[in-house]
Length: 172
Image (tube, rainbow, N blue to C red):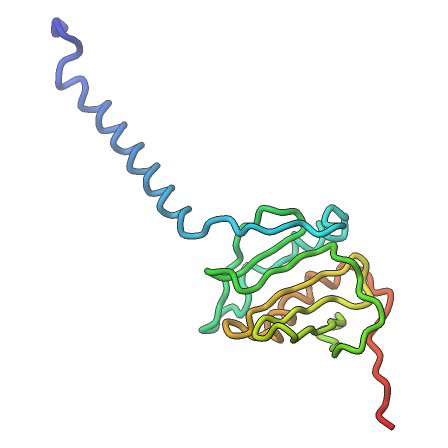
């Protein structure tokens, strides 16, 4: 016989338990997802390029993996981008305009040429040279080595075919 004011207390226990479990699971999900909010970024002009899609799917899960300075990959809100660290200290944008001839330092790392802009130290900008679309990486060098970051990103970036290379002029 049912209770005149609704289900019996014994009948509501399983329902309360399920509700409690669902609420607890929801709270845990919110708490864990709150640890790493999405990194806001603006997409580059050519971020929708198929070459950029090929780069993004090859990005590493961490920069400086297995070191004290390890920077885990973060979710971003823009196409053709990547970010690492909490707070983010390495930012990648694919689809930026390719740099023209420059007197800035240019280095080759794992077969990828990078132009280095150190004018905003300790934030260093590394832009691929001789690849279209170009990839720009911003690294906070106080947190992780720029050399480490571009070394670990060069594998993903190398899927964009090289059309040119750094050159050096011998000193007179």
